[in-house]
Length: 167
Image 1 (cartoon, rainbow, N blue to C red):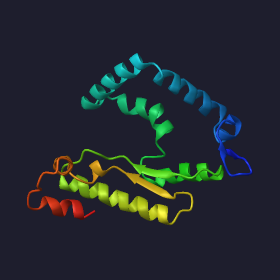
Image 2: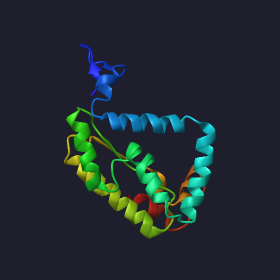
Image 3: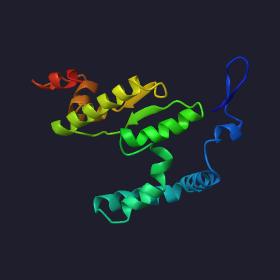
């Protein structure tokens, strides 16, 4: 929760209030992570190595992500997992934006799966005062080729127009 003045303006400079929902251990881990992320050479190296590790399915990759970056930037692996994080934030008067970050989908089954998950997120948010907003990436709902054609004002092929109107 951020402190506010009588005029309703939030004051994020009060770190005691801003981070009151974090334990000392969580704060130390967050500080360590952001210290590492502040090193541009380390980020470049980690990004390249991380992509290779994912591509070649190295066994430690999932564990490394799950124990470092994931808890800092993700509320959970699915909506049910996210509810715990949403509830914890709400206990400290912090609202949640559900952000389903799937993107770059081209297969119709993948696009449909993203649409269904986005709809579930909207339904969850509609029934939850702590979640006023749902965010999704258009690149997860529409084939990139169609988006490029739209961007460059190209004519869509037969059937492509229906793909963008279904969501």
